[in-house]
Image 1 (cartoon, rainbow, N blue to C red):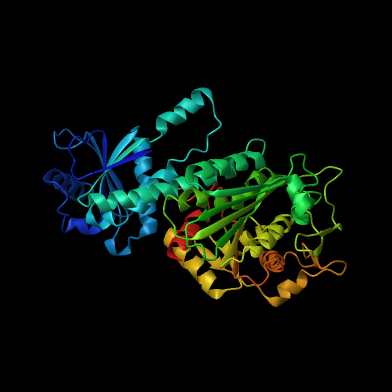
Image 2 (image 1 turned 120 degrees about the vertical axis):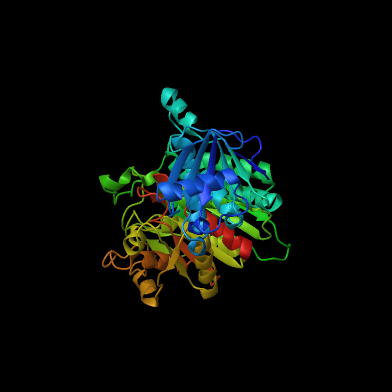
Length: 491
C-alpha cells in the first residue's frame, strides 16, 4: 500500500472519505470547504445523519471541486474518541474503498484526526491483509481487485502526519508479517522458513544472527527442545537474532517466542475440533520476528535479543511419551506428564539460554494454554510476572495499542504443583490441571529464569481468532506485536 500526504484536494479523484464528529453539526472545522459544508448540512437535515460512530452516508458528486464519490463516516463525540477508535476508522476507510471498488482513496484529516494519523494508517494496513495468500487463478485475481493500493491523506500538518503515517505503516507491516507466519501451514512455514525470514531481516537491517541446528542443540544439550522434536521428521532449530540499538554497556531485553510449527498434542492427542488450527502454535516465535521488522526502522534505542525455539510436536515410534524423564539445558530433570504441554518445555530451554545473556528484562510470548482463554476469553492476553513494574509497563502499553493485557496470579502453590515425585519437575499437573492451568504453565517456566526480571505473555486466547475485531480477519491476529514495540519504545 502506498500512502501520500498533501495539503489540499487538488487533483483528487475517485473516492473521498470525510470523517465527521457529532460536534460538527454546530460548528464545522475550517478545513471543510463550502461544498463539504453544504453536503453535510443536507444529510443532517434531510437524512437525520448524526455522526454516530461508523455511521455512513454516500454521495455521488458532480462538482469540479470534489471527487466523484464521497462518503461521510461518523466518528462519534470528540471527547470519547481515542487511538482504538482511530484504528477502527482506518479499517472502515479500507472497507468503504472496497465496497465502492476503489483501489485509490483519499481521506480528509480534520485537526481532531491529525493526532491519530499513525493509528489510522495501522487500521488501513491491517484491514488490507489477505488471508487468501495461497489462492490461485480467478479467485486470486478477484482478491487482487479488492486490494486498496493508494491512499492520500489531506491535512494542513503535512510533515507531522507524514512521520506518524510512516510509523503506522512500519507497525502494520510488522503485524502483517506475523500473521503470515502464523497463518502459513506447517508444510510451508516450517523451521527452515523461519530461518530464511530471519536471514532476510539480517540482510535488511544488519542484525546479528545465530542458527542453532540439531547438531548444535545436541552438543549444547538443549534437552527440552530435543525431546519434543523426537517424534518429528524435520529437525528442531533455535534462531537467535540480535538488535544492538542501545549502548554497548546496556543490558539487553530478551524476547523468547514459542515456535511449535504444528502441535498434534503428541500421545496426548488433541481432539478433532481443535487440531486443525494447530499451525497457529508458532504465534509466539512469529510475534518476535514481527517485532524485529520494526526495531531498526523505528530506531528503537534498546539492545534486544530474540530467541526462537522451533519444532513440531508429532507422533511416531521415537516421540516422547507420558512418564518419560528428560534432562533440560538447565540440568534440571522433568517428568513428561502430558505430551501436549510441550510449549513450556521448549520455552524452558530458551529461557535458560536467555538468562545467560544477563538481561534487564526477559519476556516470553506463547500460545501456551487454552486455560488463558477460559479465564480471559479471546480479547485479553494473560500476563504473569515476578516484577510488578514490568507487568505494569506491559499492561499500560497494551492499553495504548488495543491489544489489552490482564495480569493473572502466579502463586507459590502453583509452583509446588509443578514439582514431581520422580524428577525435579513435571510439565503438567494432571491431578488438578483444569484449575488455574495458565498460572501453572507460567509457574513451570519460572523455574528456568534464574531470578531474572521476567514476564510471560500467554496469547493462547488472542493469537488466533474466529471472532475478529474490525481491523482483523479470521485467523492470526498478530497479538502482542504492537504492544512489545510500544513497550520497547517507551522503556
